Amino acid sequence: MRISDPKLVAALPELGIELRPGARMTELTSLGIGGTTDLLRIRRHAQLPELIRRLRDAGIPYRFIGGGTNLLVRDGELPYVVLQLVRPEPDVRLEENFAHVDAAADLGRMVTFCAKHDLGGMEGLIGVPGTVGGALRMNAGAYGTQIGAYVREIQVYRAAAGQMETLSGSQINFEYRHTSFALDDIMLTVKLELPSKPFREILQGIRICNEKRRASQPLNQKSAGCIFKNPPGASAGRMIDGLGLKGHGVGDARVSDRHANFFINAGQASAADMLALIADVRERVRRAHGVELEEEIILWTG
Ligand code: EPU
Image 1 (cartoon, rainbow, N blue to C red):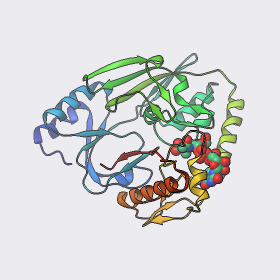
Image 2 (image 1 turned 90 degrees about the vertical axis):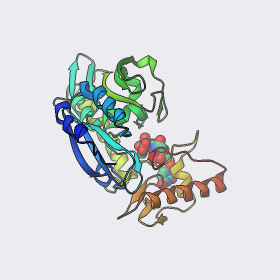
Image 3 (image 1 turned 90 degrees about the horizontal axis):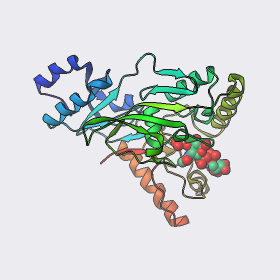
Image 4 (image 1 turned 180 degrees about the vertical axis):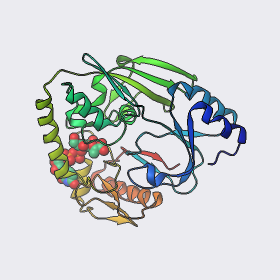
């Protein structure tokens, strides 16, 4: 979708917002899939309510993107514009055992920064790609660590109410790859409480997780991480692998040879290819195991 209203276009720089017309979602997502739309990059959180108000007045639908690392976007021209927070400098501020982090911060860099200041706990999250905001929305987790466990306070823009709100960690339910945030809540900043740990010890934990990840996941290929959630007590990857589906594909969308719950864009895969592969694998698992796999990735394909 293109913003054509000249008054709105002219107002954007005053709000500290950069307009990138016709941005390619292939470049904004780790899967490298998706069509085009206008991208609005927001430098100042405080201008968000005004921007949303103006978009609503102009009848322009919008969606928010973080790092684009857990997302499958539809092909063609998108029927909405995409908003993204610009990472401020600095993006992490420490105060004793608390880290105040901007939602646009890179998750891995944030974990490393805290580690260098002897704050640990999040070693397992080191190789999870994406922003802190995205990790919060999904309650990202790996190797026994979930980010939700460390959240003490979070500032969100609640689009439904049109206002900023500060929620305490206990007001949010963090479950396996799921949170109680409303779909239109926009993460702005978070306060994490982290246990003190010597840097060398944290580094050792990070190395172990990195090795495990390198050994089992296709890190150098275009993917969105695991496609399906693990069903209770089972592993989606093991089930798909067990059906001999590694390397199976639709167009350039493939089940990874390395980890069967990672689906790869091996070239010029379209969203349609990836969706067809997801549907095909889900159906095969349903027939073989009677289990209906649920997507772990977020779909912007409707
Ligand atoms: N397995 C296979 N074949 C495969 C893949 C896995 O047999 O192709 C087996 C493994 O040998 C292992 C079991 O399945 O015995 C589980 O595999 P793994 O340890 O790789 O973990 P996972 O359950 O597939 C989960 C998360 C990952 C996270 C890892 C490490 C989900 C859906 N996936 O994977 O998260 O990195 O544990 O903690 O919860 C993500 O969220 O995108 C993601 C990649």
